[in-house]
Image (cartoon, rainbow over all chains, first blue to last red; front, side, top):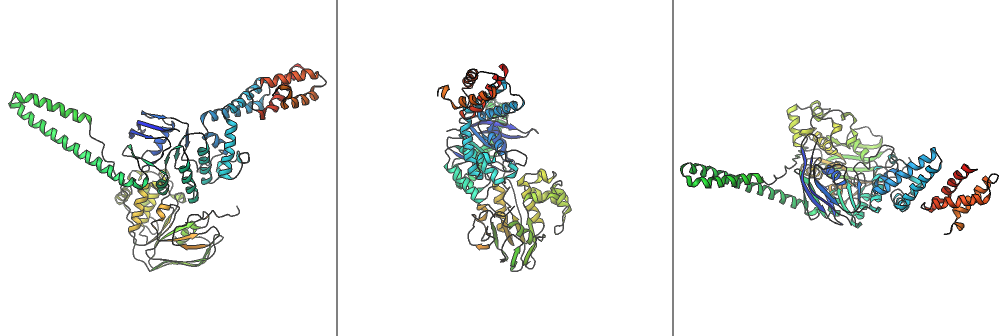
Length: 539
Length: 64
């Protein structure tokens, strides 16, 4: 089995800012460590340093056992990479090298059939056999059957962009978990997976004997799988040796301890400075005191040279103030509503103050239902209406705003839109600061991270004075802290909330669940239901 | 497996004997194929028949 040992790693960004300093931790044999931290804290950079993609400015990485890496972009591959290429890329370096040699020799044989070319091809094949290439192909066959239900030969030339994000992730995970590498680095392995897929991932990670370091924002996955938590914050990293359940208490305790150490250091520093001053005055009058004065000066210099203990990391202050307001008792009424071709007609009454989780199969029409309530045009039959004083506010999945891509948050806030008055620059910046977005205020929307885009959308909801929040996967791109801030804001919100979500942890904060079934039936449930399968529809 | 019983060798000899009957004696063809098989000894079994035949053909063409 393998391990990873990171010691005193430092990394500086191109603008000179120190992103990581003195990062040291060890992921021991067979450990399942989660790497958490705010968006932009340096988690992905740290993974890239460990995997060797990026050279650390100083410090060292030691590891044993082959290293398998799943990068974040898997799941969103849109170019013409094939299944075969991805499997090769995930294989150990020796296999990759042998495979490329066979490819090159095959191409050469098409051009020329002379004896040296043939012998080169024979050598490449022999080498492929020597590095275990034929066994690897058997594993790939198992992998594609498990992930896609198709033998390797039937799908090796298929392009990844014809697979869903979940299928791409599943394929990569199967390949790494069944592969020979003993240490796995997984950057957001659960993205794009539906809840049954996430449960599958949890079981596989719990079963594996490999050493795993993974980044995830899914609190349920963190709580079930991680046996230790590495936190990247305040420019460095620290390790909580327990699971995610006790993580919050540990983090708070650490922050308090850091603050206490710093306070003691400041006090001791002040005491030494005062002492030096007093001795200085006494030394002027008495030569006997001169020696003591110099000794104390040296002591102060040494104390200052050793430097203060690290500061308590600044808390990401995301203060969401979703106010809402009193509305009619019935906030949403649907009678024999059917979104054409998506589901069977259903009735629904949502009351003022309800927190309704909208769950169910992918492709069953959940997002369309929210869009309809938000006043967008969606083909339907049957009736629906909103109650008195109900003002809907819609949080769409981030890619649903093409018109925002080139505009900056400040510009979007300044101009306003129907139902949301514009605000001046000062107020806009104050609001952005409350959402931890002050630095992103002047950059185009498309260049903001997923988490920043999500927080900005929640800010727009706050400013629009909505009394009915329609949220489509709001926690999908939020880091753990922002997701918790959103939960607090929703708890304090005076109004009604309907949210589509696959986030099991988030769903626990709701009190009613409307489930869109794979068979087209829409039903209510007192408990969250996550195992509706994907809707099968002719495509 | 002795080379005389190797199916990769037998198949290649049979096919190449047909192809080169007019120009070369069957004993020559057999010797060339067996030499090729020996030169390709590290190649995985599944790829052998094709590679042995191609290499032998290339060598026979250069002498025929």
